[in-house]
Length: 324
Ligand code: UD1
Image 1 (tube, rainbow, N blue to C red):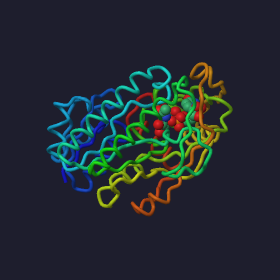
Image 2: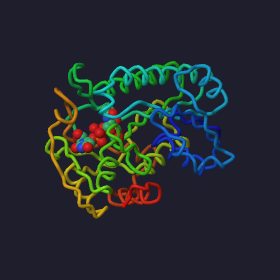
Image 3: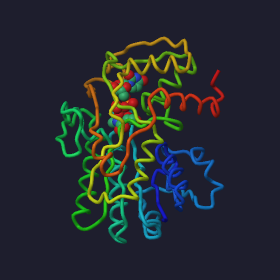
Image 4: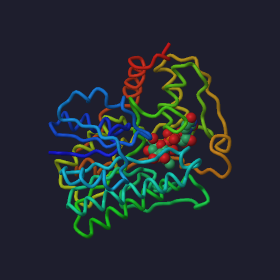
């Protein structure tokens, strides 16, 4: 099949391109390199079935002919990260909504299937664990910018399902804390690459809050594999959680990372206010119900946290000169 991956030079997108090429598809990656990077797909450039296009997924003249030419669009391009939400909520809201509405409008024009990358953030701070795809969501005040990404992704899901109601084939995947090689390790990235980088450099590892909050960290190759499985199954109009259901607290994560890297990094604790400013809200726990992924996609995550962190550490050893 001919497949378009928006955000294809990004973290999850680049792993998805790899997976789809391995399955024998012809893959076009569209990326504006805001989060993505040419180096994430440098190893794919020689593959005759791979093409990388620089462009924005909200730019109709770029997107429209690409969607026309391809059979399915995997829409992964997004502005995300908690720090982005608190620093630049306008960018998070505008770019995410406009990208997704452009993609859906073109997909509807040519009746092309859309697989939309949503997020576990959609559940907000709900305490009805494990999160089921049809469960309620619980968000804080709109004064708390952290929730703007959750709100944008929820609106984008609504938009997908609204086009779906008009006949467009759509599938929504809610990713739970993907981590692994090529993850953004800057302050705008996720906690796993931030901790691993700090540990490798023997710098301070910082827990925000008391460190007892937990997440279900999912190795990116599992995330990509689950996403590709959508091609083989009937998942029309479905929302599916993609992740492990093994929770790890952030304090435990720090210890695991230190052990895997044999690091001497001190572990420090700071308040959420110090990390993200006044009035920040976080969820204590986030655990997916993964029955639907198992039943509809026959997907079960394979990589445990230690193995996944080791793969991330190895990727630094190969590529990062700062590794001691
Ligand atoms: C964020 C994203 C989510 C994405 C996930 C994984 C938003 C609003 N949320 O969620 O969509 O799936 O990242 O990339 O964009 N922490 C520390 N020290 C640090 C960094 C983080 O203690 O140096 C803590 C945070 O306070 C939080 C936990 O680690 O409690 C996880 O943080 P993070 O990796 O940013 O992920 P999420 O908040 O789950």
